[in-house]
Image (cartoon, rainbow, N blue to C red; front, side, top):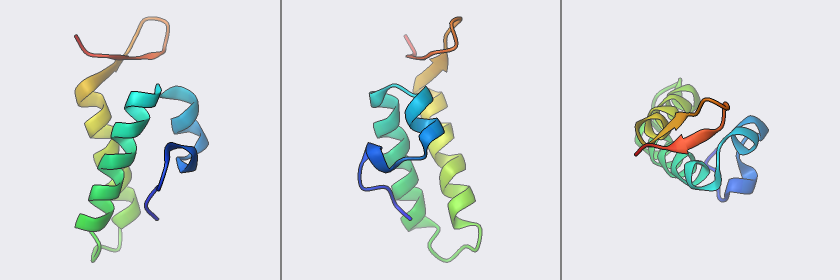
Length: 70
């Protein structure tokens, strides 16, 4: 189930990630969804790939909010 827009992302993702991180998550998820089309764990893998993509470019700040790596 690819996500056409950030508004379609799961609530926890929308609640905790800033919009640029949501964009990255959605794009990585959708790409992984297509890449692993024949794997029975497709959705799980796509979510894992999306989180890895986010964690490469963002980190959790001291206040718990996600921030772009500098």
